[in-house]
Length: 279
Image 1 (cartoon, rainbow, N blue to C red):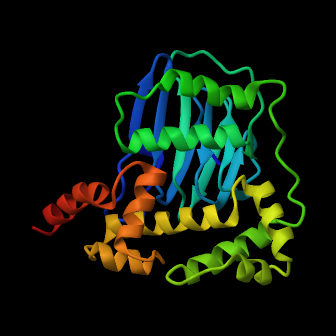
Image 2 (image 1 turned 45 degrees about the vertical axis):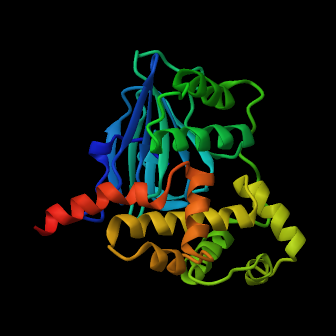
């Protein structure tokens, strides 16, 4: 997955979440919304990226060879300074990026993506929650240093072998979840779709994505809800039902636990924008 600025992302919808940005010492941290994009640039500085969602498209990074890419959910990526980048996706996905703003470079010199690392996942989720809430107590410099350390230290984990959880199977599972998100979805049904036993599926999925199938499903419900919050004026109760939450209260509780905010708080600026556009 390529790292890019908000100016290089092409929004697919008339209403889109804003790019959220924070500064901490020599670091700039951005949370890019889930939007379609097309980017072509030479990286001015080294940068780390973290894909919260699975993403697919075409890219060429440090090469003139354009090829399909599959960014795993919870995958860490790195693009070094001076690297030629082309990347496009019809849907994109929510993406965190961390960059030096003082010209200093990372020790890592080769680009990579889809690195799954539990400490990096926890850090990225913590940073997303703080960005969504504009937290004044966030320790951006410490978080940025810790995330970069996960990708540049000698003991940094290698991108895992996919084993039975191939890109094809992950894509099939994504499509199945997307089509069934408004109803109950069991681990048994997901495992059955891929022709795997339930226990094997849980282990293989966690190895490939860094999270359990249940946690991934919750994240997909949240992503669908956030899309509806910014693109529709449906009642919160109707959005909860469409996304497979047991109730509006259940959706609100999940928002607070995972994102540190409420659906109503995220929706308000979007509603104001919709109202202005329709006036």
